[in-house]
Image (tube, rainbow, N blue to C red; front, top):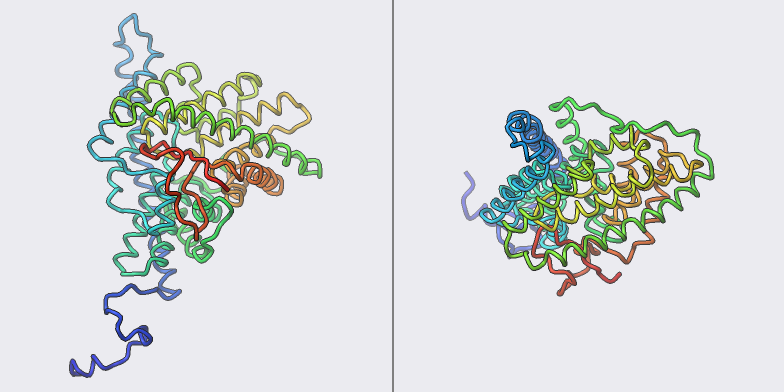
Amino acid sequence: MTSRATRAEAPSATKEAAPNERPDSPRQLTYTQLMMCAALIGVVGGLVATIYYFVLESLMHGVWHSLPERITPYFPSWLPESNYVWIATTVGGLCVGIVLYFMGLPGEMAKVVDSIHNPGKIDVRKTPAMVVASLVAITAGGSAGPEAPLVQVNGSFGSWLGEKLNLDAASIRVLTFCGMSAALGAFFGAPIGAALFALEIPHRRGLEYYEAVAPAVVSAILSFAVFRINTGITIGGFYHFEAVPELQPINLVQGLLLGAVGAVVAILFITIFKAIGELLAPLEHDLILLATLGGLIIGLIAYVYPQTLFFSEEQIHTVIESGATLGAATLLAIALAKMFAISFTLHSGFLGGFIFPLFFIGANTGLAIALLIPELHPTVAMVCLMAAVNVAVTKTPVSTSIILSVLSGTTMLPVIVIASFTSFVLTSNVAMIGTQRSRQAAPAKEPLFPQTLPGKILQQVPG
């Protein structure tokens, strides 16, 4: 047996240049080890997304189908059954406030983005609060989806794994990106686009953490496969738009113009979002009252426009299938109402993402424009507006183009890219996620709009 002295004198293959380095100092993975970790994170991410999906589906069915069937027949004569919506959202808001009061604020997308930059990981200790609070918030009917909670939960698993393996900060960041990509890969059903989305969203000028692309794609693909196998959801285009005739050069011009319109719509949304944040600021320290009030307002908006309820993944189907029967004016009113619903949702403490709600705004606006301009194909208008509005807010032109090309099942990628980048360029000095920045940049010392609530993520940061 080799003696202790002999072992101490033996050079280390990985630490030859650092004789004073501690044995427990951070290390890096080989490329093969990195890919194995990415695969593990993808499988775990797919399982987490599956469990989250089934729990959320059960809660949604119970609150919005089973429970109304049981209790609405007993409503007093002076309280019509249609009032169930605002009653349910108000009670749901109360529950959201109670959860946040006792479990604390787990943070939101702006916090995740900030953590990616520094310290390069997501705190796993906030996961229980995020899971519970987001499930309650989404079930309550808020206009926010599960992508943000899943990003934080799976991203924190990647961070935890990196810490357990005693990796350096750069390697932990890559595994965190893998977790985020796994979450979005399951949610969007477009693995490559999902991975790129996770890598684009920390920045305002384009993807910079290029070293994480390959492992992030591996995680996204495996998560996507595990999620689809377990849920039975089909693979391919999620939305069935009217088929677009063979693309012509004029469609490229239309994409340019629609991208500009989408930028204007997004700026209107950001303006409304800011105004609602300032309006609710005096209540920010009373989480229960604020969330209850938010639930009430969300319910009252849905009482007038039921299409604004929930995070709109399913509601976009309705816009595609029967939205034209509503007329352009009603479609624009619904889009405007959705802007207020999202703003009250996020500013009142309801946790969740806003990607599909932004798609919904774009779909309604695009269809309204197509009805006003018959020469414009409805599918071209809707998909381009969906892309442009989302890109202006999230600053993710490449991934959004890919995701929408997959979700729409169309061959419109060149037109979508033009709309996305037009909106991206026109809104380069407008930021909703104020923590987005270059990987070398330091965080702003004094944010224009302090982020004391989960929804307060709008900041105007100089370009």
